[in-house]
Length: 276
Image (cartoon, helix red, strand yellow):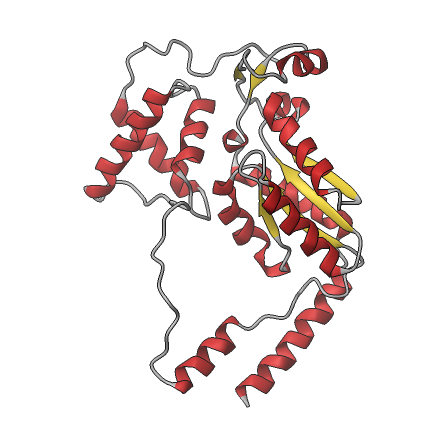
């Protein structure tokens, strides 16, 4: 693994017009929405920004200013939304809405229950856009999960009545590795867990610049013993096309295409009945 390079000198002068222009290009390269956090770590990975709170706040301010002037694409904010009760103008509009949203469980008749797991909530939108057609449930741990969330997932697996597998991606750092272990052991419901990212090998393969890890992390010693040094690489730094491919290749190992086609065919039949 190469030595820490990202951010270089945190005191160096940042040329914000160039950084904002590159940031806009990164956002437009996605076929889904992008969070500020994802954008920030892509810029850190390209060594355009230091990995500091000050740089993050400055990026937030600069991009917001550019958005207000119409010079920057919108970012997504999964932490805030407008909460409104569903309502309809008429019974006819309610029936039309039902036809638009109706979907069968497209995972029915699969030989196992597949779950897509990710450490970061901000990546859920990408997973939904890439693999939503399959109907595979997505679980975002958001760090060390509460016991309530762990219990909810375990109950969901049990309700399916079949073996379950988790396809997971998280940060490459002491906590990033341990979050997966902690969740897997506390949930105790997955027959198989496949970590698609990030690994030490992927940091090298995709030339992701490691940042200095946190020596205060209680898991740092074990991480150094496994990998030879203490580093931190954010999952958000991985280009989306690569992350999508890693998930897709893992899904293919488990997915029964014939069962999926049967579920979709039954869904079409159901829709005809709703339209009648």
